[in-house]
Image (tube, rainbow, N blue to C red; front, side, top):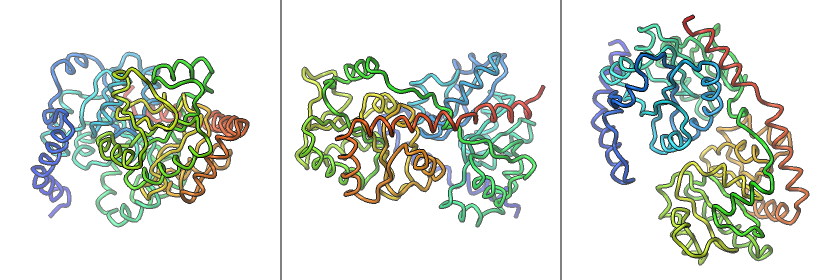
Length: 431
């Protein structure tokens, strides 16, 4: 049996389980299921915004990809002002960030990879080009785009060292899908070598750099920091340690470090941002069990008093991490003390503050290497090294300034990926 036919059969068999999964997530998180969009139905208002206009479709799976797509979306708006932009996402948190930032004319969920769902949305949108962020490879979707002669591009492509063996094992499955792409822009030489080994077309694949380097960057002026702190009701005389994108098994270690730091620095506030807001209650329990006062971000405006030294501001909202980095003196980037692959170090670097991160940065090896090369952050092996590094930064304002400035220099020296991606798109777009 042809593998593509087998894939379609398996997809249909798996569809009821996918529906149950999305239904459970929607109910448990108190959000709309949006099954209509996942089956390719575009709301009437969205169809009206796209009607009669050329469309460029960009797909970003979740929060990380949505954030990485920001500079490219702005570049598309600048280069193609007559086009409408459709942004599709897979996760609810990704959609929340995209809608908060108003990143496109229409924001919708990516359809299930079934023939009827994919065709329905492609019929409604009829895009002139499709740009897929990082490594989203869907057989039915790519096949239908190819059949309609729609240019299909991979942007900011990456294949991590950890996932490469799995891709290689199923190269017979991925090779024909990758051959349908009009262009594949990879983040690094290593990513290019890996995707070529899986079966990407060599003549249409190239290194274009990492879009995440093209984020806006600037040191935080005193008046901006003061205004931001007022918005979060944080006193100006507190030192703020922002811990972003944490995962299970990590918060306990970080909170233990915070308790030790409070013995040395009594004017310290911890801002804790779990990667997944639905874990807020779980993390809040961990904080309370340690005897630390905790305040949820969503309850901040309801209280007469704001934040104070020794407490934890627990962020249960999405899309605020960059502002929180901007008002902070020091940042720790989560997902790195536990083996989840780490998160983007460039976000705090773009605001000129020093960064601490753990040993598990498998998904960001290039960015990690550059961060260390430029002296824009400190990598620690364990909880004790994290405590020592944080204490050094908090005790030495000059060190914070030097390391934060190094992060800004890294971003200044490493930009240009947006223009290279736009050139790839322009080459593939119908004239």
